[in-house]
Every structure is written in structure tokens, then in C-alpha cells.
Image 1 (cartoon, each protein chain N blue to C red):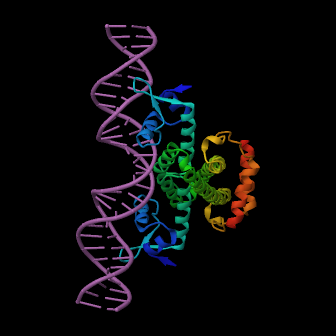
Image 2 (cartoon, rainbow over the protein chains, first blue to last red):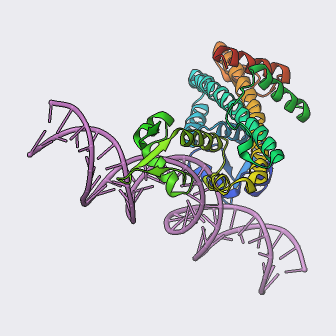
Image 3 (cartoon, each protein chain N blue to C red):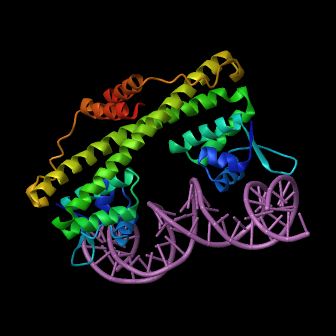
Length: 152
Length: 152
DNA sequence: ATAGTCCTTAGAGGGGACTCTAAGTCAATA
DNA sequence: TATTGACTTAGAGTCCCCTCTAAGGACTAT
């Protein structure tokens, strides 16, 4: 299957502006053109776009993604570099999850505090910073409950 | 205890530039001055800064944080708003964790693919997109192992 | 007493990632 | 045939969040 930029924009959630911007930034050198100079995307391109999207979501700068794509273009000689990149990105994502869990904990504590404050009618009546930490198990139980709810 | 802006910068990891920028943006109207006009932070201020940092980490725009701080300044009449804000932010953080777990899964899959490719010497020899999804339990086991390693 | 360090202010500069405008081409439809 | 709509390009503008500069004042150590 072949797709125009507009179709790809709808399918990926990236605007056509963004898709052209990505091309200019060297992220999508693989996209071909038709005989009128218009971009045509195929299914492999969509897969790679999805991967680019994933990497961007994990906080990787466009420049690093560009590097990765150019390694892909360069062929099998760059397999080790690509593996190393993903291994590093794995650490980054794990770190993000770690921080998000800590943030969730703080936010949950605040919800608890404010619920009691609303009930009491005043913030002064509740202990606002006795941050009774949840255990790792309790945190994981929260994540698990959430995932169950989402059928992840 | 009282602290100068430089001390606070070291303690919080926010630069003194950033601390002044936050004040200009209305995030820290609570910070007092000494008789030379220099900012002096107390321990409550550090607590609030830590909270601001947490909210920012969860992706909240500075403008929304400013709103929250002004609710705090306004007193008990705004408790419900603050509770609602944290409840909404809880959903945001849970969503972030959800996405991070999916990203971790994709990255892990890529690591697997590239490890096999490196072993085989070519990308062409391995199935690159049979994304054999991990179960939620396996994902959680990963998070748990990571947390155990970090003594969270 | 002189350098160094810290602070103040207003305002300019920068980076990342878009987001859009303007002017033009092309193909299909009423 | 005329218009609509999707596409092209280069380049300007925007948004968020800093990050720094310049010019100057005050304290601290040598």
C-alpha cells in the first residue's frame, strides 16, 4: 500500500507540517516521491515512523533519532551501534518510569492531604507533609491495578 | 534555616537563573527578601519548590503551576480546586507510566532483535517485527527488578 | 584595598520542536 | 473551464523554558 502525506498524517497523528519538518531534519530519508515530486509512503515507512515516534516519546532528541536512521541506512555494519543505542534508551525509559512512580506517590499523597483538608474545611487542620511513603510493593500494586483496568 | 539563592540552587538543582525566572513567572511569590533586597528562602519554601519541581516533571506547564501556587496563597477557599488539579495530574502521571511501559516493551523488543542480528551478522536474518509482546506481569517483573536494584 | 564572589535588575539570546504563511503546481470534479 | 483541494517549496513565526549578559552594588578573604 502507498500513502500520501495527508493520509500518513491522519494515520500517525503527526501533522503534514511535522512530517515535512522531519524529512528536512533528516529523519525520513527513506520516503520516496512520485513523478510529480509528491511524497509517497509505504507500509515499511509507516513502521519506521512508528519507531521514530516511540523514540521521540522516550525523550530522544530528533538529532539522535536522525543518527539512528542513518545507521539503518548504512546497513549491517552499524548493528552494534544500534544495539548500544537501544540499550542506553532502555535505561532512560526505566529511569523515566522510576521518576514517574515517585511523582505518582507524591501526587497521591497530596490527593490524600487535600481530601482530608476539604473534609475538614481547612488546610491547617491536616498534617501536610508527613509524606508517609508507600512501599515499592504498594506502588507496583497501583501500576498493576491501573494496567488491569486498561487491559494492557 | 534561611538560604540564599545560590545555596538553594545547589540544594534543588535549579540554577539561580531559573529560580529568578520562576519568581518573575509568578511561581514563587512566597520568597522573602533581606534588607539588601536579596532573596531569602526558608525550609517551607524549599518544600514548595520541591513540589513545583515534581509538578514540572509530570509535564505541567509553568502557567498551571503558577495557578496552583496562587490558589495556595489564596487560602482554604481554593482547596477543592487544588484537589481537582492533583486528581487530574494523577491521571496524567498514570498515563505517562502506561506509555513508558509500552515504550519499554518496544525498546526491549528491539534489543532482542538487534542482539540476534549482531550474532547473525545481518539484520536480514532475523524477524524484525514479530513484536512478541510481553505480558503485563512480565513488564511488572521488569519494573520490580529495577526497583529492587535501586532500593526504591 | 583589591580581587573574588555573590547578589540585584532588565532584557537579549538560544534550543528544540514544531506550525504556519505565501506563492506556486497539478489533477480531479461540477 | 473554473474552482477546489492537496500537494510543493523556502522561510518566517511561535511556544516553552530556560540561560546568559551587562552593569552595577555589597560582603568576604588575603
